[in-house]
Amino acid sequence: MSILVLTSDTLIGTAATGNIEYNGQFFGTDSAASRAQMQRIVSGTAVASTSGTSIDFTSLPAFVKKITVMFSGVSTNSTSNFLIQIGSGSVTTSGYASRAVFFSGATLSGSTSSAGFGGANWAAANTQSGAITLTLLGSNTWVATGYLADSGTNASSIGGTSPALGGTLDRVRITTAGGTDTFDAGSINILYEG
Image: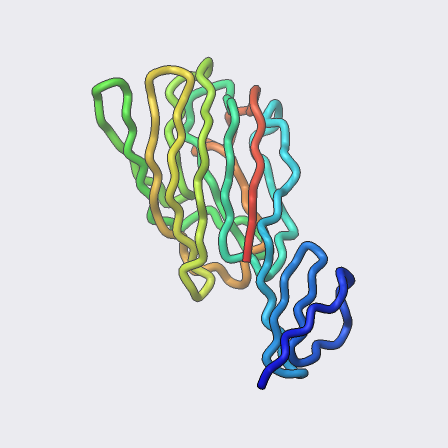
């Protein structure tokens, strides 16, 4: 018969059969030699999207399997579509198979991108809010789905897949299709989980 032991709220160095540890994280063990870690949802630090041509979240831990990129009132000084790019060691800028469907009032249109997961940007004066979720498919390949609504009557629904990264994902970049538009309003943050 197995006995489940709740230790302390301080992580211990050596796993023991039956231990569950809690210090913002949960662990379960099936032997003294292995430990399965189930991560909590971790919030990044919100970044003001008020300057620069890209916003990077780096040094993401290797356990990450799901990332949610959140936009709140984000704007740029022009109309290049937003892009989310990922990478391992450096940002991957090609090989994506991404499509966005754009809703502008009753008009429907769309676009594709091989440079990242893309969403529409109708006017420099408009702001974008919403969330795009990236999920690990396997073999360092990620898929995206999400929705952005702007301050006008427009919205975009986004989906796609990344190329296989050269290693474990450790970074996410938010930029624009042209790479030269400057952020001028709002904030962006990520949640990540294992």
